[in-house]
Image (tube, rainbow, N blue to C red; front, side, top):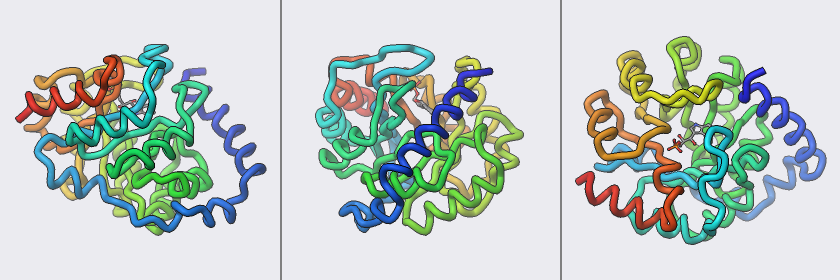
Amino acid sequence: MNILDKIVIDKRKEVDLRKSLIPISQLEQSVLFTRATTSLAQNLKNSKSGIIAEHKRRSPSKSVINNGLNVQDVASGYENAGVCGMSVLTDGKYFGGSLDDLLTARASCNLPLLRKEFIIDEYQIVEAKAYGADVILLIAAILTRDEIKQFSELAKSLKLDVLLEVHNEEELHKSIMPSLDMLGVNNRNLKTFDVSLNTSKALSKIIPNNFVKVSESGISNIEAIKQLQPYGYQGFLIGENFMKTDNPGASATEFIKNLS
Ligand SMILES: O=P(O)(O)OC[C@@H](O)[C@@H](O)c1c[nH]c2ccccc12
């Protein structure tokens, strides 16, 4: 069994437990549930840098990245740096994140927030909205076409943007549909952890132009962005490169300065 299979098995148990503790009707009554969202896709279209900066304490591929920061500082630091949006890992077991991190980020900045999560159930989409997200991630590798359709349509009805993540041609073909806003190519294979920017380059050619293209993972310098821009990428999701420093906001500021 690969790591992605393990994560999904654990996630199903976790979601069942959450559902039994907090019913959907209660999530729908939360203050943030009626908040007007901001579109990350629009921000990316209007931006020169296209940086989406992530909060990530640890990962199965790297173990600990940074445990010594608080989300508030990271979120306000990213906002001051002028990033287009922030991604917040909410998985606890494998990434050390939580929905509380999302709430804290929401309270600390006005950036569009992506709930970075392994979404396998509609419940998690309602939860994303209730905890202040503007965008959800759907991972093609763990979903059927019907699920992608059902989940993305629910997200759109809640005024959330949808970033659909693929890693190969087959996942891309199965996923193309009008209810997606952004197509993300993960340069990291979630099953083996191999990272290559060539994945983004190769798949760019078959992503229809009406979707904002986002390249995800393994981006650690300006050179990578310069290489990817000619392939039509307008968004660049960066985690570790910022999070491994003492001050991710300052690191993002420096990065964006050098980009322009
Ligand atoms: O830290 P990196 O290599 O810059 O990667 C960030 C982000 O792309 C990565 O965290 C990610 C991309 N897709 C995911 C799906 C689940 C968990 C994590 C991810």
